[in-house]
Image (cartoon, rainbow, N blue to C red; front, top):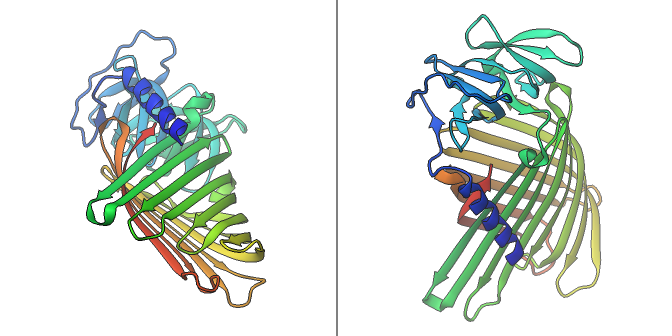
Amino acid sequence: MSKTIFLFLFLFFLKISAQTSDSLVLKNNDIKIKELKIPHEQWTDTIVLKNNDIIIGEIKSMNKGVLQIETDYSKSDFKLEWKEVKFISSSRTHIINLTSGVLVNGILSKSKTPSKCEIKNIETQTTTEVSLRDIVYIKPVNDSFWDRLDASFDVGIKLTKAENLQQLTININLGYTAKRWFATAMYKQIQSIQDDSEPIRRIDTDLSYVHLLPKDFFVPLSVTTLSNTEQDIQLRIISKAGYGKYILRDNKKYWGVASGLSFNHERYFDTSEAFKSLELFLGTDFNLYDLGDFSIQSKVTVFPSITESKRVRTDFNLDTKYDLPLDFFIKLSFVYNYDNKPKNGAAKDDYVFQTTFGWKLD
């Protein structure tokens, strides 16, 4: 764990040394930028804002309503609200996702109509004019490994004199985005020590792969683990495979649902016997991010058992994050687990409420 913390600290200081102390974010035309004449051969992307300011550089990404572009004008990337863009053009190939679910490898060209652009599909060689508000995701095809990688690390510490309570929370998230799929990895640990009480430890891990299909359908695969002293779970391993669809997806929010089969392998404390069961799973994921510096994500998954009569488990997660300068953030999280047929003597449910401070590699 100490090596992981050191890695994130190293990445943070490496990034800070390569950028100025301020990060420029354009919101509601608060900052005026005149046309940037940049003598750099690689800058082929042009952004025209609704106030007619022009930025020339290299588009890094557009996701969740925020366009990120690199220029020679600043050591740090510009971050613009997508709704403030009037025209966009680029000679490079990008992965482009529309609200209709269409996923295109295409070239963006300026349209004659404001707040629209033309997309040339490099596979079919056809050109379509679309509204900018119908574009929900842009990513260059030729990005390097590091450009496709996302990471975040946050930690919370609680110390009280009463009963000598010491609690440590650590959360680590990694993500990688490719042309037709993305993968994520997550590690969460809570360790609590208190006088006259048994130590409390909870460890969650998640390794997920999502393959994107046309019309906003997707195939989710994942392996999750849980170790929780409160519910007497030494190790629970859940392997899931299913089929899902994004019901809503725009520059303000997304909502996806999925269902499929889950294989549950459990081992409890004080017993060497392993318990195995086959389950269905029904899940939903809602993310709201057009809230200024706030974002909210909630996930609910229900597991009705197929092989164990009338057993139902439920997992619920709620994360509220507030972004700070220099890619720092504050996060409030709530996690709830329920099992209507736990091991004899174990609690049916467990919940965790935590406040953490972290940093993201963006």
